[in-house]
Length: 446
Image 1 (cartoon, rainbow, N blue to C red):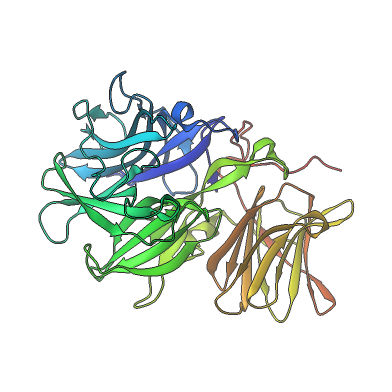
Image 2 (image 1 turned 90 degrees about the horizontal axis):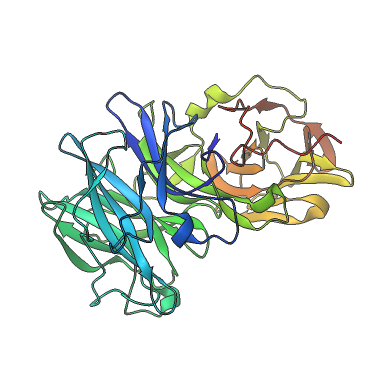
């Protein structure tokens, strides 16, 4: 249900599926700390494998920094492998050093492998294959040229790359954009003006392109300021692109799309946690979350829904206290559901009064809130350790963290009436892990 490598945390990642159906994740990795030095702590890619996108097995490190003097000597950031020949080509972010003002100098490099499992990489040359073009993008202080994502061009026999960049024509605080480049051979690229430049985004990170069943395109981009991600759609790669609004709520980041074992299209993303595993700890990089179904209705905004592949991990209903659980509740008027209690009363509560949805901790301290586009008829709540996710009418709408209180029977209060809710306990893939990356086991018994 949650994955991070032993003793470390997960940041941006890429997903692969081998010919035998085995999945692999390549991911940035670093220690649990709020003072995160990405130039010294994100210098290698971790790798893990899975048969179902839920239970992950950590493997060895798969890639690391380049040699001194090269464009990737300081750090290697977000990557994207694509099938090529009988193996793979991987585009990745390299950091050579810092500007005088302390900003990372970024460019995109290329590596090849004869394998399809995310291992065996060899660099293509000693320099980058594509860099920011100063005609359209910032190239010094506050620059961006990272998080490449490559797909086949729908207007030629070549390739299209999208990149997180900074639009040079806009003030830096709203310059976040998606740059793009084209190539016939993966090694020589022509940079073009921004594909998407909203004008109200600080950083538009980790862009993803997904071709839909009707031949149109979906672009998902992470928004730095909100720490969530949004969606755009277009009939062709070159546009016109229509902004569809938020797809993942605040706290979900760096999404990737892949076909699940059942053939459905799902999204995986990262989710944060807190240093020290306490509510007072600073937020830090976290874990890989479980898949959500990607639903793209004709002519309307895409959404993330509960993926039925998770049902196999749910046990029989109970009304006993459970730390890892899924529960459903009908919404008729204002409802408040208590999931955990403390010495002074409720410690974790999910509430909804139609369109307004919120989560509170001890003493009613707000932990998260959102306003739904339509009043909710049902809520599904998932807790995995400290993680809380809420689905409204099946759609993923809110996520937060809570380390307080002890598990209690879930109770819902509506118009002064209290009822106990049955829940289905969640079976964790590896419940016996005991390191900094294990799912939080809950507070000690009172």
